[in-house]
Length: 400
Ligand code: PMP
Ligand code: GLU
Image (tube, rainbow, N blue to C red; front, side, top):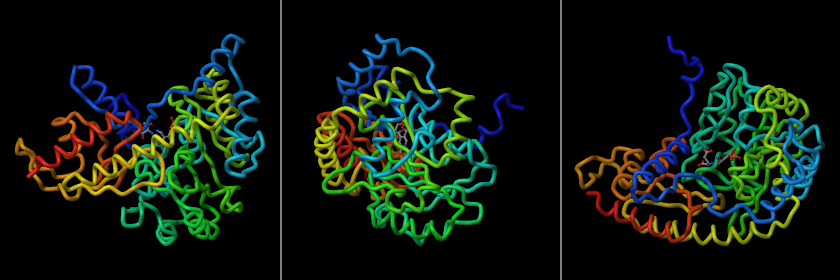
């Protein structure tokens, strides 16, 4: 008998975190590694946010807070939902945790019974199937290939719903594809959901602000207000505010859900760090113009990476609407041989090959539930990205 609990056998370690760690470990041995594995902005947290955190510490912000954060943070989140999403939430409809990931964890722990089904469009962020799996939740994966823009259609949603469906996950712009659901796309899904009152929606809006060209972000509770009473609208500080290490995420949702999530958190982490809460208040209430400035850079990098990968033999890279990922297909390279004589049988073989041969770390598509693809995060210095894409081109050209 294993000392480790049985429930862990249903859960895989996070592949995105594993790839980032592998890249760090290889770099520590002196190898020249370019890590395009982690979904983390390379920009620093804005200076005014850091100043606010320093000030908060000087002012004695070093103690416990309420589970869902200090009143100033709750107010800032309520104002954010109103300003950006035209959503009205009251204080008892706001949850605050140590990042978007724990918000998902709390929501799933608070609601999922063994056998409950969670509809997850693939490709999906690696943690969506595994978090509900801790609680016996069953992921119902819906394949959304590049030919449908990596997006789920209303027909696919209708076909996936059963009496056991508890949640639908929506991630737009998406990790790992960058694909964004338009207002009309969401309306189509909402029409289906209105016919199935037992299905709740988990809307992961963490890439809300990272959109390019003229793509307009929308979230489902805003597009169909009748769904607001069964939607958890999640967001966080990690991506647009460049605050991954501060660990702040939040959600708006119905009182019944928020109360249950608060109960979970009151017996686990209590709350996120007081100083991080003060920093988040400054970020949410302060100037927002740095986001547009960062997006200019992200868009340039996206265009560079899409263009360079499309020049590589055997790769096909769609242009995403948002986030900071591309999700190229490597179908054209399957069954080819590496210079060492190894056959590329799948996307995992391909990312292993580019890591070993050229020192470029990327995440294989199988981890996100749609192969043969791989994910590249372009939240990395532009010159490094260019170097990495040249290495990938060279690696592709060397396959026979
Ligand atoms: N959702 C998605 C789609 C993500 O990519 C991430 C980043 N890993 C998160 C949630 C959670 O991020 P964090 O816990 O840093 O807020
Ligand atoms: N969201 C990032 C990623 O997908 C961070 C790592 C993680 O939390 O999975 O790479």
